[in-house]
Length: 466
Image 1 (cartoon, one colour):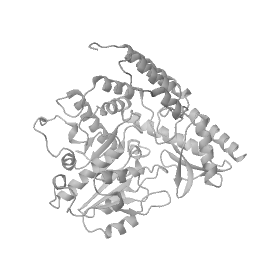
Image 2 (tube, one colour):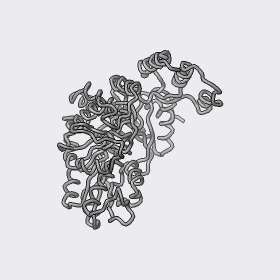
Image 3 (spheres, one colour):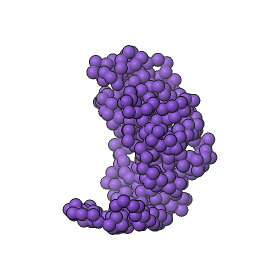
Image 4 (spheres, helix red, strand yellow):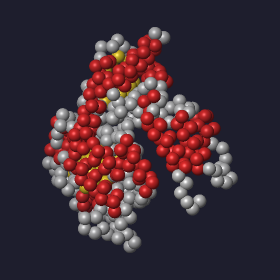
């Protein structure tokens, strides 16, 4: 094929628009089973070419026949999943069509400049220190890894150790500190960096999951040498926020310490004048990680890493350039200096599109509205017989327990998921089964919440009736 065949593109466009237009009427969870999907997609590799339209049509059937849950729909409340703003989807389509390697300025100047502007807007939106460097990795796991690599470089470099060249064998010990309720992606990043997740000194938390500053001070007293402290803004279960400002004041009494913030979704509270007091002092940290594909509602995958020490950030990522890689001129920005991946898509363009379209007030309204809708869930379930609310609503997270034992809660969740109307995930909170309600979707309305509340109550009634 030497010419553009637009037919598969036209078909894919129609399928995508139809899917998005009807997403509120689709089952919230997948309905197709493994056998059906294997039959649909499987079989031997075709011996020769098949029409591209046939392949696109098959992909559309996978969605139509229940293989694609409406995870970006208005009544999907699992896994802190965003809802993809139309302008962000449109930008992502252009990213795929342009097919740029968004690593170097000289490969795609327009994308490099848009990313540079988006990075500056992120720093402004979160009110982070001037000069904070920003990268757009795949998600929060890689954002953590990038930030903690910068911390490793910074702390060991102060001791004269070149970790990028010499590795960790024989290096001075770096003490790792995290709260008992830290997210698993922190430990994953520590494993990737060679620190080992088993070396984390665990700080006790309070009943909501917040790191206790008094316990942190005791832990730090036993650390002789450089320290990385990982804090959390938005517990994935309770939404609880560590007192990061107070933690930073404690940690920064020493000059050999670094504070990292896991703000996968909770950091977006910084964008809301009403919620900003909840994250007061977060700007005192040394690095931050977040996800744009959560509360900013851009397509997967897009994380954000922000580092208050740009030279350590750059040195930890692009330690040296190969001869064929030109150095950027003044004012030019090479993305490979800020993220671990080299050949990467222009995932920052949907971020630029979303921020430009929403503006500061639009982002704040999105965050505030989602939090208000979770409070509507709370109010609708409060006082219902057989329902126990397990946390105060801080941001966008609510946990609910049904009945007196774990089996009841799990069966209620299963019934809700089978309904197709809405989807909630399960979790374990201090040893007890619970249902998580997570809401970061621009599409969700009060009517969606009320409809979902009826499904929850009906499922509970059916389970308790036997």
